[in-house]
Length: 195
Image (cartoon, rainbow, N blue to C red; front, side):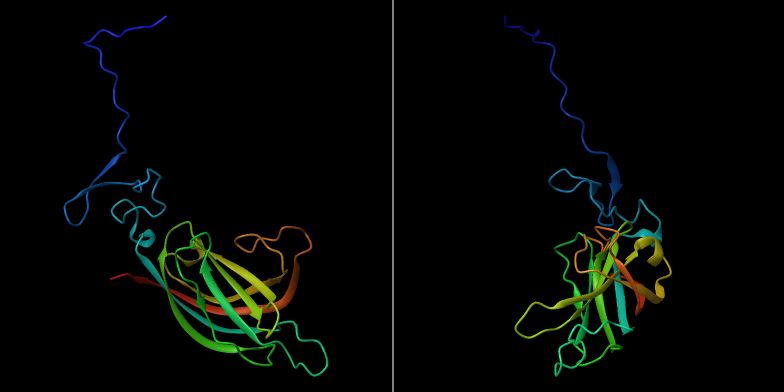
């Protein structure tokens, strides 16, 4: 059986994504990306000034304290720590990384880096590692900082490091075996406008 529609009945096209009005250049836009997905960072006319999509963060990784000694063999010294900060789930955004401090359980980095593309709802992942030559670096601990802890005023303080080599994205422990230590990471995050 074949059904024919009368010629004067035309199926309706799929609805267009919602229009958000003109952008700063007068172009109409939507909150969808080119592939049709919702844009994870809506334009600043839709959200408050503190949730703009063009945020960049000035991150100062100051120091860590009470790290564990991953270089426990005789003659190897103490851990050689460095810290990495990235935006969880955003592979296209380059992470920032401190220099390595040799033989220290209380490293002072005073490192400043810039991360761009941070949006409301994003999370910063901090991970501290022991640099090893000739083998895989050892995980010393990780911490997260959510956008609600950063936006709009920034963050300054210490984060407790969770010491577990196997964590999921966002440093959330996979099991109850995550070990809270006395280790802390001192940081400062400033929200800056992207020019």
